[in-house]
Image 1 (cartoon, rainbow, N blue to C red):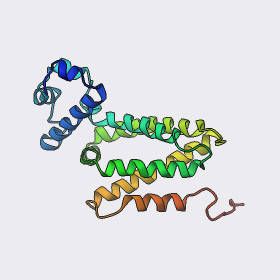
Image 2: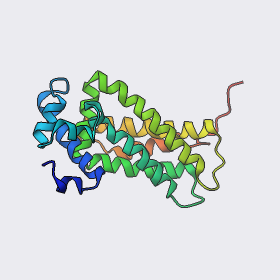
Image 3: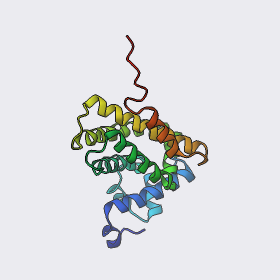
Amino acid sequence: MTDDGGVRGRARRAVRAELAELALKLFAERGFEATTMDDVAREAGLSKRSLFRYFATKEDMVLGAVDAMGEGFAAELAARPEGEDPWDSLHAVTLSWEATIRQSTTQVQRLRLIESTPALRARFHQRREESRRLITAALRARPGTDLDDFTAALYTAVAGAALDTATAEWVRTNGTTDPATLITRAFTAFRPGHGHDSPPA
Protein backbone atom coordinates (compact mmCIF):
# COMPACT_ATOMS: atom_id res chain seq x y z
CA MET A 1 0.00 0.00 0.00
CA THR A 2 1.43 3.42 -0.91
CA ASP A 3 0.37 6.98 -0.20
CA ASP A 4 -0.34 7.95 -3.81
CA GLY A 5 -3.25 8.90 -6.05
CA GLY A 6 -4.30 5.25 -6.30
CA VAL A 7 -4.99 5.08 -2.57
CA ARG A 8 -6.66 8.48 -2.52
CA GLY A 9 -8.92 7.40 -5.35
CA ARG A 10 -10.37 4.48 -3.39
CA ALA A 11 -13.50 4.72 -1.35
CA ARG A 12 -12.58 5.89 2.15
CA ARG A 13 -14.45 3.00 3.72
CA ALA A 14 -12.49 0.43 1.74
CA VAL A 15 -9.17 2.02 2.69
CA ARG A 16 -10.15 2.11 6.35
CA ALA A 17 -11.12 -1.57 6.23
CA GLU A 18 -7.79 -2.49 4.65
CA LEU A 19 -5.82 -0.51 7.22
CA ALA A 20 -7.84 -1.95 10.10
CA GLU A 21 -7.19 -5.48 8.86
CA LEU A 22 -3.46 -4.78 8.65
CA ALA A 23 -3.47 -3.28 12.15
CA LEU A 24 -5.30 -6.30 13.58
CA LYS A 25 -2.65 -8.56 12.07
CA LEU A 26 0.11 -6.53 13.72
CA PHE A 27 -1.72 -6.42 17.06
CA ALA A 28 -2.11 -10.21 16.97
CA GLU A 29 1.58 -10.71 16.17
CA ARG A 30 3.15 -8.09 18.46
CA GLY A 31 0.49 -7.28 21.03
CA PHE A 32 -1.83 -4.29 21.12
CA GLU A 33 0.15 -2.27 23.66
CA ALA A 34 3.49 -3.00 21.97
CA THR A 35 2.34 -1.89 18.52
CA THR A 36 2.47 1.83 17.74
CA MET A 37 0.80 4.00 15.14
CA ASP A 38 4.27 4.39 13.61
CA ASP A 39 4.49 0.62 13.24
CA VAL A 40 1.16 0.46 11.41
CA ALA A 41 2.05 3.39 9.16
CA ARG A 42 5.41 1.85 8.31
CA GLU A 43 3.87 -1.54 7.52
CA ALA A 44 1.22 0.12 5.35
CA GLY A 45 3.75 2.22 3.46
CA LEU A 46 2.09 5.43 4.65
CA SER A 47 3.32 8.45 6.49
CA LYS A 48 2.00 8.76 10.03
CA ARG A 49 0.21 11.93 8.97
CA SER A 50 -1.58 10.04 6.20
CA LEU A 51 -2.57 7.28 8.61
CA PHE A 52 -4.13 9.86 10.93
CA ARG A 53 -6.45 10.89 8.09
CA TYR A 54 -8.17 7.55 8.55
CA PHE A 55 -7.69 6.74 12.25
CA ALA A 56 -6.94 9.03 15.19
CA THR A 57 -5.92 6.23 17.57
CA LYS A 58 -5.06 2.53 17.69
CA GLU A 59 -8.36 1.93 19.45
CA ASP A 60 -10.24 3.36 16.48
CA MET A 61 -8.58 0.82 14.20
CA VAL A 62 -10.13 -1.96 16.23
CA LEU A 63 -13.44 -0.38 17.22
CA GLY A 64 -14.35 1.59 14.10
CA ALA A 65 -16.06 -1.53 12.78
CA VAL A 66 -18.41 -1.44 15.77
CA ASP A 67 -19.77 1.91 14.61
CA ALA A 68 -20.12 0.62 11.06
CA MET A 69 -21.94 -2.46 12.31
CA GLY A 70 -24.45 -0.35 14.25
CA GLU A 71 -25.11 1.81 11.23
CA GLY A 72 -25.42 -1.22 8.97
CA PHE A 73 -27.73 -3.03 11.38
CA ALA A 74 -30.00 0.02 11.63
CA ALA A 75 -30.09 0.40 7.84
CA GLU A 76 -30.92 -3.27 7.33
CA LEU A 77 -33.64 -3.02 9.96
CA ALA A 78 -35.17 -0.05 8.18
CA ALA A 79 -35.22 -2.04 4.93
CA ARG A 80 -37.22 -4.96 6.34
CA PRO A 81 -40.75 -5.46 4.89
CA GLU A 82 -43.29 -2.92 6.06
CA GLY A 83 -45.75 -4.40 8.54
CA GLU A 84 -43.37 -7.14 9.68
CA ASP A 85 -43.48 -7.80 13.41
CA PRO A 86 -40.61 -5.83 14.98
CA TRP A 87 -39.42 -8.89 16.90
CA ASP A 88 -39.23 -10.87 13.66
CA SER A 89 -37.40 -8.00 11.98
CA LEU A 90 -34.81 -7.93 14.74
CA HIS A 91 -34.44 -11.71 14.59
CA ALA A 92 -33.83 -11.67 10.84
CA VAL A 93 -31.28 -8.86 10.95
CA THR A 94 -29.49 -10.38 13.95
CA LEU A 95 -29.10 -13.66 12.03
CA SER A 96 -27.82 -11.72 9.03
CA TRP A 97 -25.12 -10.01 11.08
CA GLU A 98 -24.19 -13.23 12.84
CA ALA A 99 -23.48 -14.77 9.45
CA THR A 100 -21.37 -11.75 8.47
CA ILE A 101 -19.30 -12.03 11.65
CA ARG A 102 -18.87 -15.80 11.32
CA GLN A 103 -17.65 -15.55 7.73
CA SER A 104 -15.04 -12.92 8.57
CA THR A 105 -11.72 -13.99 10.04
CA THR A 106 -11.03 -10.31 10.72
CA GLN A 107 -14.12 -10.04 12.91
CA VAL A 108 -13.06 -13.08 14.90
CA GLN A 109 -9.58 -11.61 15.41
CA ARG A 110 -11.18 -8.34 16.51
CA LEU A 111 -13.42 -10.04 19.07
CA ARG A 112 -10.53 -12.00 20.55
CA LEU A 113 -8.35 -8.90 20.75
CA ILE A 114 -11.09 -6.90 22.48
CA GLU A 115 -11.73 -9.70 24.96
CA SER A 116 -8.04 -9.89 25.89
CA THR A 117 -7.41 -6.12 26.13
CA PRO A 118 -9.07 -4.32 29.08
CA ALA A 119 -8.73 -0.83 27.57
CA LEU A 120 -10.46 -2.01 24.40
CA ARG A 121 -13.22 -3.79 26.31
CA ALA A 122 -14.24 -0.59 28.08
CA ARG A 123 -14.41 1.45 24.88
CA PHE A 124 -16.08 -1.43 23.04
CA HIS A 125 -18.99 -1.41 25.48
CA GLN A 126 -19.29 2.37 25.15
CA ARG A 127 -19.44 2.11 21.37
CA ARG A 128 -21.92 -0.73 21.58
CA GLU A 129 -24.25 1.36 23.70
CA GLU A 130 -24.13 4.11 21.07
CA SER A 131 -24.89 1.55 18.36
CA ARG A 132 -27.79 0.14 20.36
CA ARG A 133 -29.33 3.58 20.71
CA LEU A 134 -29.09 3.93 16.93
CA ILE A 135 -30.74 0.54 16.40
CA THR A 136 -33.48 1.33 18.92
CA ALA A 137 -34.27 4.55 17.07
CA ALA A 138 -34.40 2.66 13.76
CA LEU A 139 -36.75 0.09 15.28
CA ARG A 140 -39.12 2.76 16.55
CA ALA A 141 -39.02 4.60 13.22
CA ARG A 142 -40.32 1.65 11.21
CA PRO A 143 -43.73 2.36 9.64
CA GLY A 144 -46.59 0.88 11.64
CA THR A 145 -44.47 0.23 14.73
CA ASP A 146 -46.04 1.44 17.97
CA LEU A 147 -43.27 0.43 20.38
CA ASP A 148 -42.56 2.86 23.19
CA ASP A 149 -38.99 3.85 24.08
CA PHE A 150 -38.64 1.28 26.85
CA THR A 151 -39.94 -1.65 24.80
CA ALA A 152 -37.85 -0.79 21.76
CA ALA A 153 -34.73 -0.48 23.93
CA LEU A 154 -35.56 -3.80 25.60
CA TYR A 155 -35.98 -5.55 22.24
CA THR A 156 -32.63 -4.16 21.09
CA ALA A 157 -30.91 -5.22 24.31
CA VAL A 158 -32.18 -8.80 23.95
CA ALA A 159 -31.06 -8.92 20.31
CA GLY A 160 -27.62 -7.61 21.26
CA ALA A 161 -27.29 -10.07 24.13
CA ALA A 162 -28.30 -12.97 21.88
CA LEU A 163 -25.77 -11.97 19.23
CA ASP A 164 -22.96 -11.35 21.73
CA THR A 165 -23.53 -14.56 23.69
CA ALA A 166 -23.89 -16.77 20.62
CA THR A 167 -20.81 -15.27 18.97
CA ALA A 168 -18.76 -15.59 22.16
CA GLU A 169 -19.76 -19.24 22.46
CA TRP A 170 -18.81 -19.84 18.83
CA VAL A 171 -15.39 -18.25 19.38
CA ARG A 172 -14.89 -20.10 22.69
CA THR A 173 -15.61 -23.48 21.10
CA ASN A 174 -13.47 -22.75 18.03
CA GLY A 175 -16.45 -22.91 15.70
CA THR A 176 -17.96 -26.17 16.91
CA THR A 177 -21.28 -24.58 17.90
CA ASP A 178 -23.86 -23.06 15.56
CA PRO A 179 -24.47 -19.46 16.69
CA ALA A 180 -27.51 -19.08 14.44
CA THR A 181 -29.24 -21.89 16.33
CA LEU A 182 -28.38 -20.26 19.66
CA ILE A 183 -29.74 -16.91 18.48
CA THR A 184 -32.99 -18.49 17.34
CA ARG A 185 -33.30 -20.25 20.70
CA ALA A 186 -32.93 -16.90 22.44
CA PHE A 187 -35.47 -15.14 20.24
CA THR A 188 -37.93 -18.00 20.73
CA ALA A 189 -37.48 -18.05 24.50
CA PHE A 190 -37.83 -14.30 24.92
CA ARG A 191 -40.47 -13.66 22.28
CA PRO A 192 -43.04 -11.17 23.66
CA GLY A 193 -46.02 -13.09 25.05
CA HIS A 194 -44.08 -16.36 25.20
CA GLY A 195 -45.48 -18.32 28.14
CA HIS A 196 -48.07 -15.62 28.94
CA ASP A 197 -46.98 -15.53 32.56
CA SER A 198 -48.81 -13.10 34.79
CA PRO A 199 -46.78 -10.48 36.65
CA PRO A 200 -46.18 -11.11 40.36
CA ALA A 201 -48.89 -9.83 42.68
